[in-house]
Length: 590
Image 1 (cartoon, rainbow, N blue to C red):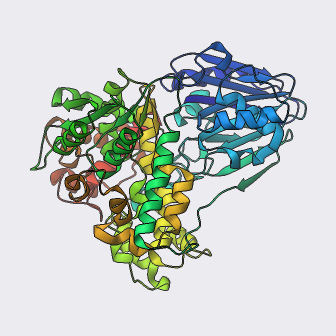
Image 2: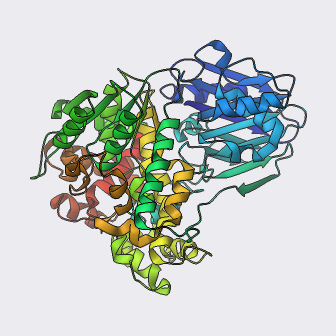
């Protein structure tokens, strides 16, 4: 787990290594254990290192194999690197390190861009061919590791974090109006390749981009889960298969040369991870839970359930309680850590949790992804039985933050566009072959887009802000493929994630399995008052906000007068949605 950066020049001009060097401090928290820079003519690559596998200097990056004529920078972890190394040795390759980074180099030399199909893990990497000047960029199947791009005539730059590209300079920082529509409508998610800034894009998940020396490039998607019925099994057989697949995924993610802990929220997903690790003989596992002061009539913790799991499986448990004295300062720090504006109040919880967890371990497993692959959210049951031709309308009614028509009363005219881009985006996705039911279509879209640019990005950004590597076993691509093939009615049973609940029976306490679905409770954001409300007011009244004039003044003032009543379709605070965008833009100097 690291931070990568680079610049490619097209033609004969050499790359600007100093520009790449300027990007690296922005990613120091992603890789606090060292940095490196490599230049070869028109290519410059930079790296910030977090030591997880092969802690020696042999594992440092950028990593070059002079014999093969290749250099790589890599962020992530390939969990099956040991098996691949032995396979490559059979082809005559020799190794100077015990790192997964070197395995990527050799695998690329052996199999070309198809090497990505052999990797089990999370990754974003760039590989430069010395002789041809070709550079290959790749991102893992579920987009767990980010890769941002800034392209201009004659040049391409890339980095693990968007602010690094801003630090490099020369970026068009105007607001992308299509992205703004998505932000306001599509649950604050901006689908790849766009970001909120016109001059920065992101490589989509499961994508390989090959860039030639003259700047021509090709891009291909190398994986997609099939949401069709490919096997016939009973409900019990599906549960057994999910349990076996998750057990394998959890075991894979223990690969490290440092200890691995678990973020234990007290929900089914993280509790099941702890239970499976205990079943595999992981004694004295370190677990962590977080809780906040209550507010607005809401509890701020779920310690009742996390304590139950910690006691049952005898973990070394850390209960982290957050008071107002830590909460308010963490808000600005959380915004600073965001590569893109992320509305979820879970961001602050993950940032504070990661701060404390990083004092004890460098790697954790986390339960993100289960809801998106196993139908755990509230908007899936209403789609059951909806005719396929009515699925777009049904999904928009359940998931979109507001109808497109409302934007005319909320955004200033210069930021409005006629097209309902979020609905068109969903319609295009739902219109593709496969995913024959409305629930299948929604799960396919959510696992490819919302999952990547909300919970997964949130976990990556907030853990990496403290040099903490988070691993997500529910997003093991083999488990995702299994879940996609599972009939919707089996997933929707028992109020959602029915197949996972059945898989966990007998191992996880029923009190956790059958509890109401919980979320990271952060009352200080869900219910804005006092100093937090003043912080929001200041952001929306700041000179930069007035000059930008994204939102109609009457809309802003109405929200400030009644800060906690207006909610989006899924219950998020509308005022926080506006304020977070402005806070992020101001924090990044846009």
